[in-house]
Image (cartoon, rainbow, N blue to C red; front, side, top):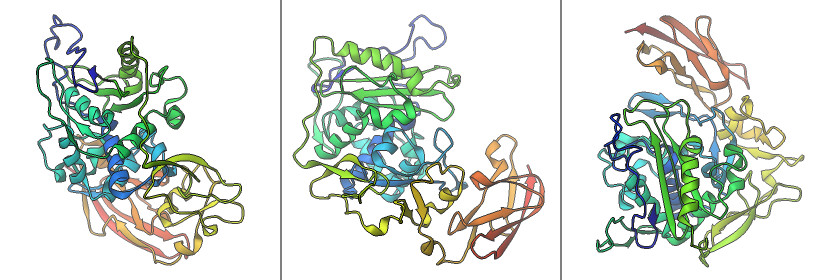
Length: 439
């Protein structure tokens, strides 16, 4: 727990029990751990600041493949589903993985985020941006609890960074690292219980009796979970895990660190009248359709209130955005999602068909003649991602491999295999032959 203005550490618990032989004398506030989704706010802050986006700007939560040094990877959200077009507010409040990675890619990659994280106090990150890749935004770079609370202090100070101090006479330099406008918009999202309700439910540990910006984080193997939040006066960060690095039994940030955070934040405001940040004059309210992110939605459309920078308002709605029944028309980016079982919004969206039919189908992965090795110690080597361009238009078949249609993957077994992709528009077929071997 720290004072936002001064950086003074008001309370610090480094382990549960100093005399516990199982890590009791480890300073848990200095240990480097995976922060999970706790780094996502910094990615969206960059989107607002560098791209002029609003809290209602749209990002695609759809099946996406990224090429890495190890091959193609297909990240998933925590609940293994995809939601189609979502606003930045919804994506951040509900802590979706895929939109955060897409935003970081649009910003130019991990380097821009790595520079910001170091600027706000996460200085121990040793690897290059290339090593972290887009996974940096979902927590593949270990940081300490002290570093994380230092970074969030910059958010709480609306863009001014500065360190923490255990003694009042210590000097902590202050410097601006991002704008107060972008920081205010991120705080508004993190303090919105309605926006996170779809993921965290009502009356969760994240809902306090006063307005508070809060974010959770959970590592992919449940070894670490976090909850960090702030008001203009106080900031609290909590890590929960085992010092021997063993995973917990499906304990997430909201269920593990969340209740501790809730009690600590309430206690931190004893004797302090809770208050909220003053909205910068350059931040204005706008009404948008949350399916398009555009202002002045047509009659009968869905509407939501969002924030934007006065100098870069969202674009205006066009009649071309909707079909006759009021559904939003989506381009080929959403083709695979529209046709999948993940699409539970069929009354809201429809494909812009003429755009889907312009480009011939071609197979991106797998490549014919390629050999795949099955490593028994790496379970994911048993799954092969199938990808075409345009996406979402292929029906895959194989006489020797099981095709998981919802996720566009094949379950690999040793042998030579033929896979066929049939273009759903024309019936034209495309074939690749691969070989699978065991190590």
